[in-house]
Length: 100
Image 1 (cartoon, rainbow, N blue to C red):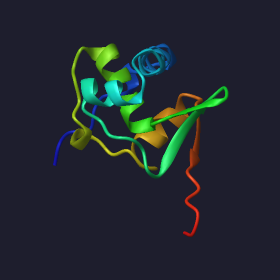
Image 2 (image 1 turned 90 degrees about the vertical axis):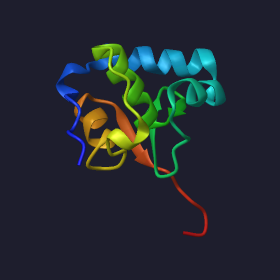
Image 3 (image 1 turned 180 degrees about the vertical axis):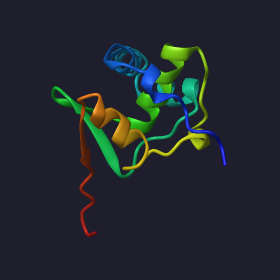
Image 4 (image 1 turned 30 degrees about the horizontal axis):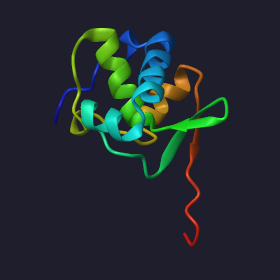
């Protein structure tokens, strides 16, 4: 089992920098450059836009520590990225899937 990343090293500024990177590159290039995939369960809401919580947190961690995380290095759901981003004050919501 991989060791959990040191999330206390990530602050709001790192998350906002990762969001700016996502906005600058666009989703496809952001995922390609950073090794993550689109979100399916949760989204982080900032203003009138939404972002993939796991990908944003992974890139924020890299900005904070210089260490690149792969998608498999940490959880994205309630016990992982959602918990960390919520603790930092970001809004996370479950994605509505019609027919579920």
